[in-house]
Image 1 (cartoon, rainbow, N blue to C red):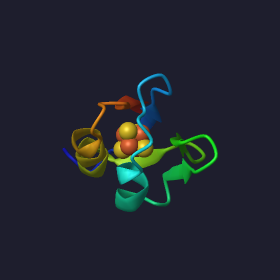
Image 2 (image 1 turned 180 degrees about the vertical axis):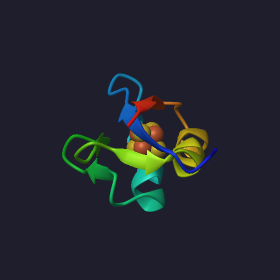
Image 3 (image 1 turned 90 degrees about the vertical axis):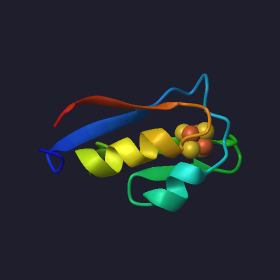
Image 4 (image 1 turned 120 degrees about the vertical axis):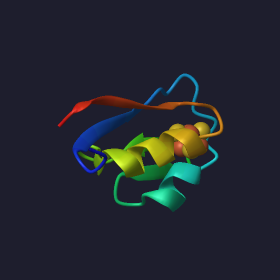
Length: 69
Ligand code: SF4
């Protein structure tokens, strides 16, 4: 099943601040210009299929799926 909800997280050590994640899922990722990196908003819940796309699109592999919500 690909539509179950999962949580995503960003590894702050490896985020390059490209902002691709915010473009993809603006309700879950927020790019911080000052810090030059992105953060997860709130619980960071996404349907699994969309979370996997965010993971795949992150150029530094900083996004991971944390757990089933
Ligand atoms: S796409 Fe990846 S590297 Fe780019 S801001 Fe988001 S977490 Fe960071």
